[in-house]
Image (cartoon, rainbow, N blue to C red; front, side, top):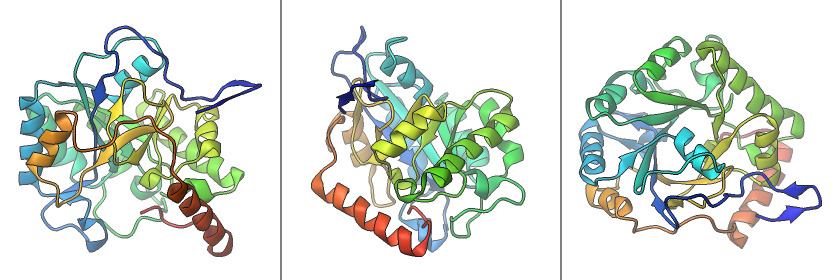
Length: 283
């Protein structure tokens, strides 16, 4: 991140007492089911795999926290525990307020769920292909089960390819829908498929979000960027040994770090394609 004449770019982590240089695994899950649709199968784990992953988290001795706790640390408001770990879920598949929430509650594990409002709200529309999804009327129930709720935009579009007006709608409308359902602020965002850019990050800050998570398939840290928190994307081929390795602070790069030339070139290619074809599904 850089600074300008207008001050620091939102998202720069500020050092606080407690965890100098701590590695923070932030796991990204999608669906937990036996027979997922083909398009999400690569990012789905079975209930048995999920239970084994959660048991590994418990056995690791790490302290599970929510994105809100990490936000407090990165904003300089409170320290993190010495060995934190975070569990996050994207989209809002039907298993989330049922068996997935139950598996977490059985182990007293908090989590953060980022919901695509166009896919779960009555009459809503999104770019997500067909899949069993939860419904908006279960969001408060999800929160009561111990999950923190965040926004995953309205349609799940590639945010870094959108016009300013469309980007603002994706960020603000999804936030408003969730806040109406819960009766309180929703200050956390996850970029669909992790796609973001300096412009998207600045817009997220202006829309009122305190944090935003990307993907990056990297370990986060207690010095990560508030508007580009790194997560480890859990695929169906990942084993319990992979999970244990990440919990031990290995097996992946540690954020923060700059985008590489390939990431930047891919962003420009997708922008050009979106200019011709319109907004596309981020996935």
